Length: 477
Ligand code: NAD
Image (cartoon, rainbow, N blue to C red; front, side, top):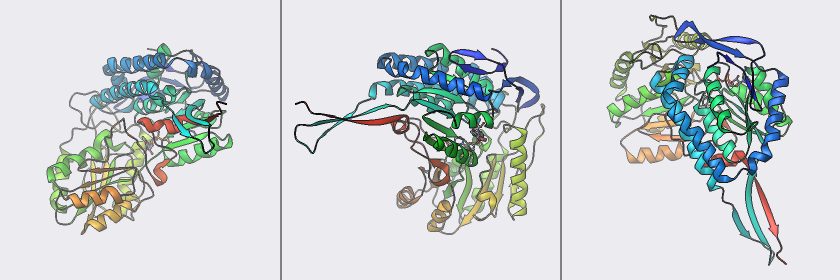
């Protein structure tokens, strides 16, 4: 594999453009390769290539499209060890998670391969006698896809699968933090797809800005709220459709009747999986006073037992965070929690390992309140804050008191509480006795408030974004 990650435009690679080093967060002495950033004119070329290829791709027979998407998925599944290793090396998640994410990406393509054959319209009676009405869906055209670094292959897959299945062509702008994984993905797609159907431009915010303000028909973005706001504003200038999936501040309400073992295991998984770098991370733990002290003691013991280390080392459970910038930001939130009056139970510091990397200890604060910034702003690291409650009603109110709304969970053995929470938590996903993170791929995913803008991703509902409806009237005479 090349160690320069450049642009793929109309089936051709172009590595010109300013380069920057891609560093391994587990070992900063390891330079994985170099990112070559796209210029504004390369972004335009990529959009033009996608535009030219779109009618041909939409016209490809359904079974042929299905077979192509299936083959892409199969290649990712077959190569999940190798690709997962690169992903873990550049992003820092433990190898098992890198491998699992690549496998899941393959499953997305295979799900949407089958979806190619499920494009079935509707018919309606007319209010006028003798007239027939058919309602069908067509591709929207060229989709710009802008993705973050925390799931570099899975998020691209859950956008690309439906975009391609419904006949659109694509320009992908992956995160500048994970260009190597994107490069391998692009090699796989380029092998299976006709020229111009899939194009990729590498680089940072300027490249993303050029894409979102370019002549595209839709932009699907996953990332932070401030970036989402800019992308939506840029896209609307061209009346392009916009879908934004952004951050959150996901709560778990732990009731006094909860199964303690389940509550601990799920809270640990939700707070510290992928070192807390998930939009669905369980960053607010809202715990009933009757079990608060036992819960915190057990949670701290489980956090301290986690092995933090090099992403590719056997037995590592938490890798480093992705970059120095992210590490400094998270350490800043640890300081802020102390300043705001939180009590540090465990962690709160950087860790030294054999190789120099961005390692942070899993961190828990107690004695926090919901008005503190650490409970209102997304931290995106291995840190969670505990709040104490006296009643279920108080827990629900705190859970709902947020600017976000991606996923909320309750730990309870009381059916009435579980059902009430499912109906009254103002979130896109609600879970009972499960962490806020770790969701299925064949059902809708998205949030409320600042967490999401536009239609849902994943499952068959993805077609609401990637297709446009047509209503046809016929007078058979
Ligand atoms: P980010 O917003 O910094 O960057 C995301 C992408 O947008 C990158 O490709 C970046 O280069 C690009 N970008 C930056 N500025 C741009 C601009 N002005 N115009 C166009 N593109 C621009 O986010 P990140 O740090 O890569 O990812 C972390 C964020 O992603 C967190 O907030 C997390 O919650 C969110 N996230 C959300 C979901 C979800 O589905 N809701 C999933 C994963 C991550």
